[in-house]
Length: 178
Image (cartoon, rainbow, N blue to C red; front, side, top):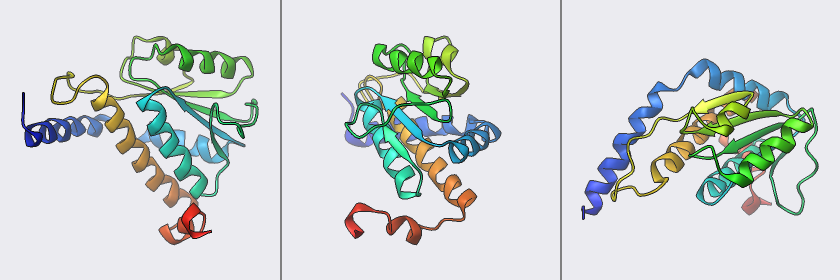
């Protein structure tokens, strides 16, 4: 068993994979987010927790964002974008949301670690996150989930710039300041 510092080093080393992201694709996805009537985000388990954090930041940016499955989430339409997160790209609940979204002609963005997956094939736009092999230092989907969190927070910074927003603007929409 490794030490805590070995685990931290292993996780931090995985973030180097994020440098392989195609910035032009991310910018295009951010433009889609800004031009959509509503933004829906979904993932199961820890991917869902990461999705919820992104939804929260989008709301703080003044956008209409929802996490699929919440009681106040409206119906998805063709004017919306749906961002789906699944490391394996085979999570059944996530695939069901993708199918429903495609049926109403909403644009689907997949975030996955598997190019050869159902979710990747269903995506209109795809973000493929390379991750190192899981190990006892970062078990199961830890590397994918943390990479997704870092990427989505970096996208928030880009969205802020694209909208001309600053942290003070977001703070005014933050729940603790109401």
